[in-house]
Length: 96
Image (tube, rainbow, N blue to C red; front, side, top):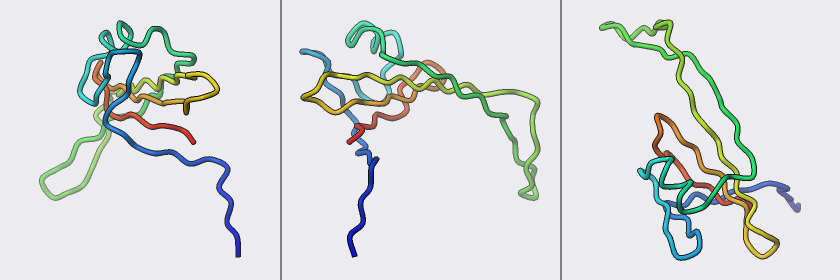
């Protein structure tokens, strides 16, 4: 049996933009300074939940925002997706 996956990604902690490195934990402003504007930007909103002492969860009425930036880096390099929450890089994924 042959299994073909049209979309896979690899997680990495570092992205090279020219002579600069971007890492998980960097702020969004430094990503823009090092890599320029992303090819695409998406904002994901989700309710924020809190836990009670007995382990139940409830919505706080607050909303969290996560930005997803995609960089198409040319035909010789895999595109990269960077997730940013609270202005800080949370993850870097290379799309294969």
